[in-house]
Image 1 (cartoon, rainbow, N blue to C red):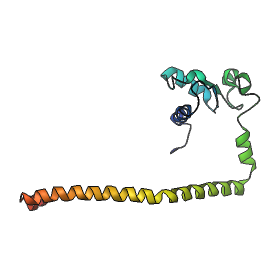
Image 2: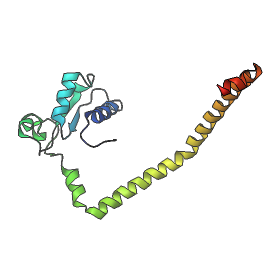
Image 3: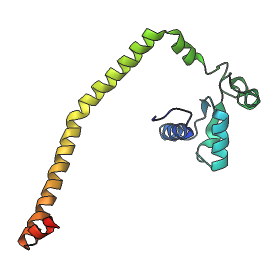
Image 4: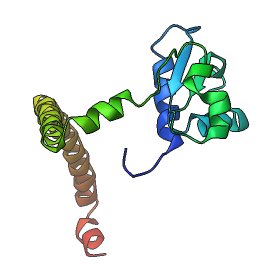
Length: 155
């Protein structure tokens, strides 16, 4: 994610990718802060048409009451007594220093994973650069052979 705020396209992309990796007819419950708006967008603009019938949308308990009539987790089949706030309550109860430690550990882990792939990335870049250099040399040699090399560079 690159910007603050609720961006539906992130959720749509995640759901589309998720449905590529689960059985085709599997029912999926989605608890999301603005699932009511997401569901409406999916119906209005035909997002996720191939899987929309297999998604049950639910909202967190703190959402507006008109939406809770339809999307409250206790009213949606399959959610049970979940209120979608457990992870947030747990995170906020861990304390500032534990949160910083957790985020720092995660960033270090991602750095380590990136470092392991650095050699392959550098090798690919080296081969691409060598190929481009070879192509440029062929073009420059053809210009030099036609005696327009100096005039071409000056222009």
